[in-house]
Structures are given as C-alpha cells and as structure tokens.
Image 1 (tube, protein in one colour):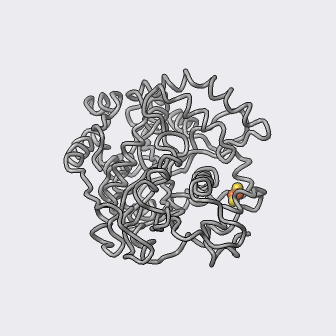
Image 2 (cartoon, protein in one colour):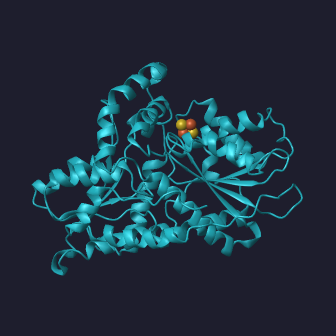
Image 3 (cartoon, protein in one colour):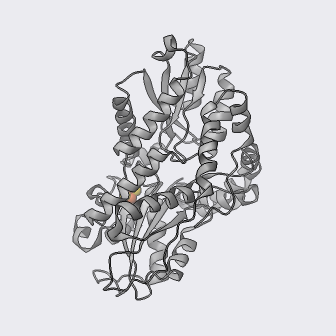
Length: 427
Ligand code: FES
C-alpha cells in the first residue's frame, strides 16, 4: 500500500532545520523522501483457509493516534477524555469527559495548527508498518505475505474501521487467518496498550461474535496473538542510542560528556501508578538499556511530560526539570522522547515549541524521534519475527493483572488474548 500523500514535516521543524538548530531533522527529511518513492507493498489477495499455509498474516499496529487535521481535534479529544483506562474520571466520566474535550478544543487546535495542521502519527505508523511487513516477507517467508494495518484508539483509522477492513480483506468469516496485535507503545501500560486491547476485544466480540464462557472460538474466526511490550529490544535500544549519539555530535567535543541526557516519557496519574501499572518500571528499563549501550557516557535523568488536570501525576515534570537545570547553569541538555515511536504533538509542540523555547538556551536540543529510522524498522521486524516463530498468544507478563485492578473488562480481555492454554494464569 502506498502512502496517500507525502508527509510534510511541520514548518517549525523545517525552520529549525534551515536555521541550523536541528540538522538531523533536515537529513532525515531527505531519507524519508527517498523512502516514500518506492513504497508499494505488493500483497497478493487473501486466499487462506483453515487448512492452508501459515500466511497471510495481518500485522496490526496499535497506538493512540492523533488528529490528522485541526477539524478532527474535538472528536479526538472526546474519545480521549471518554476513556477511563487513560484518564480515570470516575462515575461522571461520560458527563465530564465531553465537557473537558469541548473546553480544550480551541487551545489544542491551535497547537496542531502550530505544528503544521495535524499530527504526523498516522503517516509514520502506516509507513513503519508497511516497511516492517516488507522486511518480514523476506525474513519470515513461512508466514508471508504480511499485510499492514493500523488501529488507533482515538483517531482514524479507529479499531472498528481496521477490523471491518480485516474482514473485507478475507480474514475471519469462516476463513480464519492469523492476526498479530502489535502495540506501538514499547512499554506496557494499562492506560495505553491495555486500553487498545480492551477496544480490540470489544470490536472483536461485536463483529465476530462473543465467545461464551469457557467455550472455543467459532470456527473460522480471526486467530489473534499480541506483542504486548518490547522495552529493551536490542534494536529499539540501538535506534535510540544512535539518535542520541547523532545529537551529541553537534556539541563541541570538549563539552560533549557533560551534556545531560533528559529522557522524557508521557506521565501517568498517580492513581494508575499506585494501582500497580507496569509502565514506570518498563520505561526505566528502556532508559537503563540505552545508557548501557552508550557506556553511561553522560549524566542522565528520566522525567515525565504532558500531565493534564489538577490531580497528582507522576513527576518530575520535563518542563520543570529543564528550567531548573538551566537556572543552575546546566545549559547543555538533550531531550530524548523515550516512550514514543514517532513524532506527534508531545514532541513537536510540547518539547520543541514549549520546553525548548522556554529554556531559551541554544544548548537545549532534542534527539530525533524514531519515525522512519531504518534501525528501528529492522527492530520491529525482528520483534514480529520472533513472535511469529514462537507462536505464543502473548507474554506471560500480560496474564498478570495489576494489584489494584478491579476491572472485569481487563480480566475478560486478558483471558481472551491469553488463549485457552494460558487463560487460567490470568488473575
Ligand atoms: Fe491493570 Fe486492569 S488496570 S490489569
């Protein structure tokens, strides 16, 4: 599948590149342009039946998504604030959520306008999935062809749209076929990957029929498995490390080892952290693995961004951290988005236009996002290949619910994706 139109990097990033602030962004644009010229993934029509070969295999990228245009912002925010897995607002969620969404829409529309009119996450997700499938066709011919799909939680293409396409393409409906839900959040959180899986499970039941308690799937339904986390995959670590090294090279050699690496991940409400969510520990694992790869070449900290509302969220906050260090005279800082696999509003607006501009110091820079990085694409293919070969339904870690989880939906969703053999492990 070819990209419908070439992705245009936001003007602010281009301006930064042309003024010498972000040279990596400019060179990457060249790479991306080259890549988009030959994007066609030729995938034969789906012909599988229950007795056929192991392919084709549907590779479904799960992510939160973002509005591609400013007109989509209100719908995006409405879905986001309606999601109790992401932003728990209690029993009044369905009442308060839309009100917050409506109130925040003009401000967020302006932010998307400032980064070029929309989020690039769809373009990058489709590109990454297509490129990964091309690699997979070569390294895992026994499960080929691999067909790319993207399912976003809060923006098009929504989970239900993806599932409808899957059925139209010949999966399910008596033909079975294998589909892999591949989370694009490297570190697992019940508010991100968990929410996407809850949504996938919901639409699976609506479109293919609910599995009665303890009974087998109806014959010929889509056979799902899940890649639920990959925080320390060596290819992911290499891709992050390479982007950091590239940015460090822009500092004079004598100053380089004194540059602070500030890893930044999306924060979580403390109510989610205290429920036992695995995300903070997994993000920390990624940071440690990247620093190990860099031989602990620089001082570093992990901090958290993008909190909303008055309740307590996991800190320290990225913006406060940068301001504090700059105030103390530590003006050479590389921000590293460590929990996102592509640029979106949290990098292009929050880090580049808010945090970096507020810092007002040319030594505060940002490492490039993973986006179309070929090391990253290879890593995705390797993760998928290992999963396909192993044949597990999901990781053992996914079978364990958070200590504080009271959600029947989490329980049933996990039992479904764990499959018959491992569903007894879900507690
Ligand atoms: Fe973590 Fe339900 S909230 S498993």
